[in-house]
Length: 101
Image 1 (cartoon, rainbow, N blue to C red):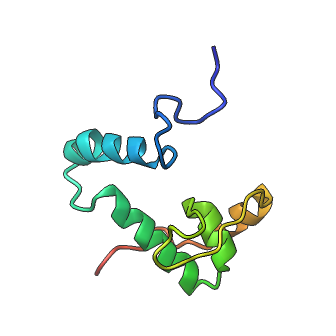
Image 2: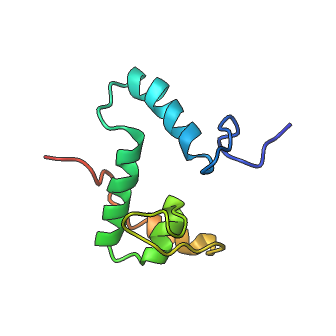
């Protein structure tokens, strides 16, 4: 049976799928590839990179999944943005925004 979700093994918790994805990344992928950054670090890096490129807070929140009143740095959350808007914003990200020379 085909799932409607890309990562169908992740379970939905109190705050959506983020905790399940974070646990998988930190326990398996991160260990296997000796990556120093934890899962949440990538959200912060993405937020900053999108902000620097001029993406609106509304679009950043939609991409990061921030809910109203729960975001420490962004407070507006919008459902239902067209995929084309999200795609355009994501394409503004540098190939490796968190890399230090």
